[in-house]
Image (spheres, rainbow, N blue to C red):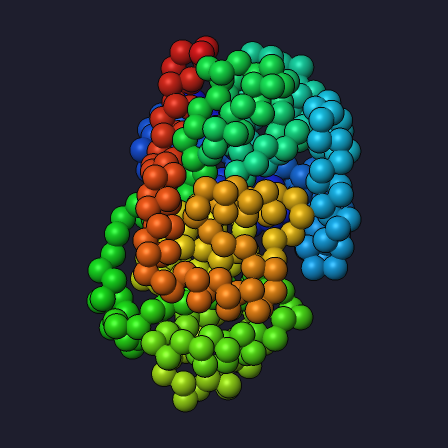
Length: 366
């Protein structure tokens, strides 16, 4: 039985989700061959400091966007510089000594991996965005799993050999490759099958946006449109919207849902933030995107990549959201974006990555 040490991080839900998808894929296809040891490295190394830093991280998205962007891009060309490479290095060394893994798989940028002295243990990185950042670079890493040709080129500029880079896409849950009956889903949820469906992710709009105002304007401008709002864990917003739209047949308000695949596949447009996992799930679901007010840094880079490749529009404010919707609702524009998404989607990323890792475990060499 081989041991896989799977490193994740709770700064942003995307890394946790990718880690979960990889772990589930190993357990589904290779349960008799590998044992997966998952660790939120920074949280376990610094249990008291991490919650504070996580709050600052979340606040930076809403209140210190420019500062976050500056820090993200700072030292972009200096691959050996990282502010936090030593923060978890001692804990990581102890963990590796204790767990004795046959391979280390990282879904979170972990510069401390470069400080490990045991070079016999192969290290692979799963890059969870559509843009490469220097913090993903690990000295001696055997493999980088990436989503774009551009990321591959950036790695090669930093002297990573081409055969160490595999373009498999960002690992999402396998269920996103399975299609559903759209008409049946809409009917079961008491929605019209002959109207355009706009899917709104409330988390993309932060706490200060007048969400009701946006919904009102969408309904007013588009008589043949219905709206599904995903409020996530924001109960206050869900309660407020349910009160406002209790009698409105064209608006459906949801809290946290396990059915994002179904909603993405049945909607015509998704308005959301540009997180790597969310937009990858949208890509698999073939749903055109409006990416709202991306934060400078990885969100902005993801948004730019999707816009450049004809898979999304970027809206900086509510008026631009309405303009983007109007542009998209011309049928040809929807078709063009769907075609671009089909052309760019890399299916079965989780399975292909796990399969390649199993090959590494069998030969322990490239």
